[in-house]
Image (cartoon, helix red, strand yellow):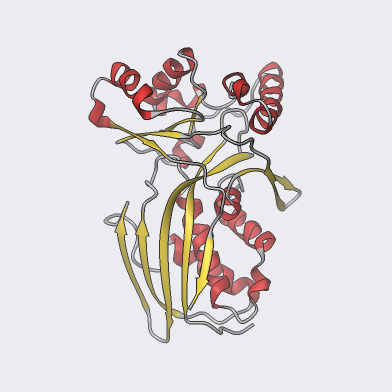
Length: 304
């Protein structure tokens, strides 16, 4: 496999996983994107980052985009390259909006863009490689494909399907705190086992959520109930959990976004919810509310 192109640009969206009952399975893409530009060189590595996390992301080979790109090239037997990488980061880091999945998908897409035979890194292969890096496909799938996706593992193989969403079913509102929580720390709060009745309850709600998105969005409040992971992670994000409880008591289909601590309201308006958030959290400066539409298109790669 040979390198044919030396300049590649990629745009990849933020994502929100789980959506309540769809733990490690459901996810959606949000119209909030990172832009990356790569120039392959014969030299070393030069990274320039601006925007979210610019002062904290690595600037060497440990950078997740670089690691993912090199993983993709290794997978197809292509030679490694020097690179000049420029990133404009708009996806908040450590907030449950898929920033690591976006970086992983971006790196793999950059690798695809360099190749003389980009089909060697088709979407199925790219999802598999992203899952190997991420550990699960729930964020990588919507980042790659856009819209709402259902992902699962068939043995060691990552699989995904795009779900039908009724027109105007979703009007996502993201509530962003000024604190972060790592996915690793959030997973460490989960119990090793759950009661059968809670698993059955959540499975039924996950099925209902697929139906609600496609045909009856008025059922979204009931469809986003779950008993597997949000309350269990409460000690790691108590303010987020309290906000979630109040929003739902007031009739809003709210969920913890991914591993948190951001909160996603599936259908919401900033003007309507801002007073409620102020009442719950006290200091409104600690939280930012943003209406972020569903992104129908997934990641995009432009060569040249």
